[in-house]
Image (tube, rainbow, N blue to C red; front, side, top):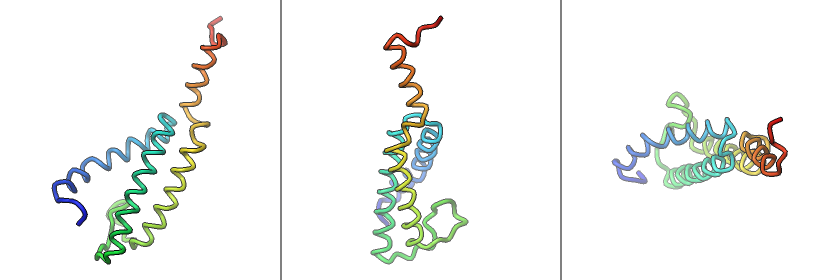
Length: 119
């Protein structure tokens, strides 16, 4: 009830794939800060959708989060998403230091300083 049915169908077909790719990037440590920032932005958007549904007292029995088998209340989903948002912020702030990104950047810096020459 927020967007047109056509836009809702487009979102339903694309958003899960975007979530999967961002999650894989984050788990693999590739594009870590960008992935965490994107995930955080999506979480803020989801929180906005949940808040408007709560405020409008929409009769939503399942938001579809984590599959259709879960029937959590919108309030529960809101709190759960806040926790995930905190994790995305932590990944953005600290995750890049322990990722493939830092390994690649470290090797590039070593090669640039002449320490990465083959023997």
